[in-house]
Length: 199
Image 1 (tube, one colour):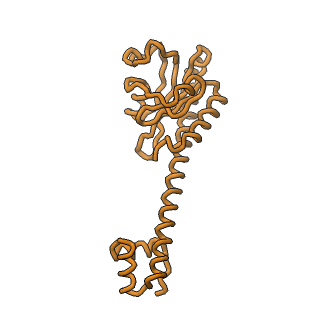
Image 2 (cartoon, rainbow, N blue to C red):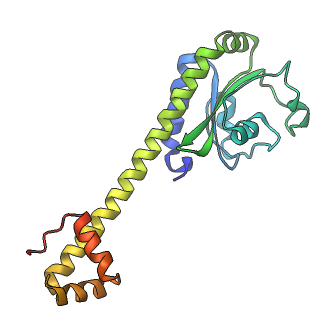
Image 3 (cartoon, helix red, strand yellow):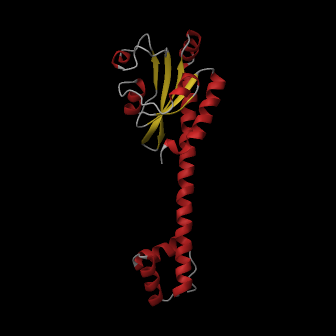
C-alpha cells in the first residue's frame, strides 16, 4: 500500500490542519514526490522534492524534525535554496509499522507563522505526529479490507469447488487440483475459513 492510494483523504487532512493552525501543510511520499498540499504547496503537487531537503533527512532518520531556516545548514545544499520562502517547518514521518511511507510537514512562510510554530514546537510536533498516525491508520484499514475481500473470494471459490466435486478424500483431491493448490494447502484453508465439508 502507498500513500498515493488515499490522496483525497490525505488532502482533506492537510486542509483541516491548515484551517486549524493557519499554516501550509504538505505530504510527501517516500519517493520524495509531493502528493498533497495547501496554500503554496497546492500548486506544487506532483513535484519531486530535492534529496538534499529536510524532508529527505526525516525520511532517512525516521524522526520528526523542526526546521528553522535561520539556523539550518542543510539549506545551502538544497536545489530550491534561492527561491525557497519557507521560514520554519515541522516534519514527521508517516509510518506503517517500521515502514516509512512519507512525510507530513507544516510550514511557515511569514514571521507570524514562524513564531507560532517555533513557540509551540512540542505541542505541534505531538499534534502532527497524531495526524500522521491517522493517515497510517486509514491506509492500514484499507489494506485489511482489501485482504478480507481477497480471503472472502478465496473462501467462496473453495466452497463452490467442494459443492461441485464433493468432500470425501478422493473428491477433495479433485477440489485441490481444480483450484491448482496442494491437498495440504486445501485442508489448511478449509480449516482457516471454517468451511463446512459435511464430514
